[in-house]
Amino acid sequence: MSDDADGARDRFQVPVALFVHRRADLLPRTLDCLRVSGLTELYVFSDGPRDAGDIPGVEKVREVIAGIDWIDPVVVARAENLGLSESIREGLDELFANHDAAVVIEDDVCVAPEFYDYACRALRHYRDEPSVAGITGLRLPFSRRALGSYPFDVFMSLRFHAWGWATWRDRWQSFSFDLDALRREVAAAPDFHPARAGYDLPIMIDQTLNAPTLGGSWDVACGINMLLHGQYFVTPTWNMVENSGFWEGTHYRSPPPWQLVWEQDLRPAGGSIRFAPPEECAPILRDYKRFHAPTLAQHVRGKTGAAIKLLRGTPVHRPQHR
Image (cartoon, rainbow, N blue to C red):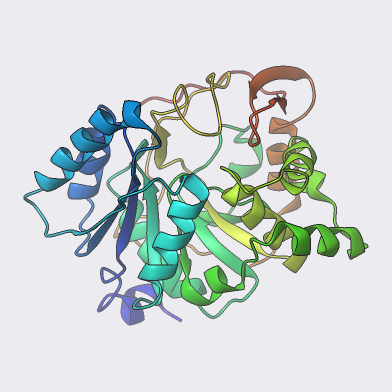
């Protein structure tokens, strides 16, 4: 399938789902990034306040959303607080009732100008590949050594990434968020080896499966589903995602020892993307896994609220802005 020939007509028809809560200070830049991306349809899911202390922040966020004048968004304002996992799950369930695919952004995620076009092209290209669970714009700052001679602009990751991502209705609906069912599937799976996707994943998966509720761990549940089903996430060879909410997010209470900044767009002239087949590239995955190697312990707030160790072993990488 030719991405440019077959996808040019409808590649900009994928809606963006933006999830917001109470971080009004971070939201304007996120919206600025979306404004220049060329999207034509925006859904905003605004979670309600957890308590009285959240009310001013939630109201301010909704004021910012009401001030959007570059597109007419569909706004879903929750009266009550659903929490991160339920907000995303219910929002995407509602959106996928009417759309076949979606790009998903949280309020602290800032995407590069080319991200939306890249995500739409990738959604078009891989839509009939059941082994592909979704698309991400995030390239973690692991070594570029194996990318130097790599002939494609994307590779297959074993890991779900929630910072700037996209998927299809059928992939989303195939994910199970029933912790009891997932626990049974993991126990019965002879080839369930989550450390292949990062040494930190077994810790997060164990905490998620043994938590009383899903809490903020919806993305870990997605990752468990991917590992159980042998699926991949399409990942670019250059990073298109910055996250400004490390200090306040549900998942982390302290920033990691690395930075995320946009990297140079590596697509050939003309905007085409050299899509890789849905197969693993061992040298890239080796360096990706080493990024999480247990040589440096960075204490972060775990998915269930307990402190866990995010283990990685590469130097701090600070690529330059374009």
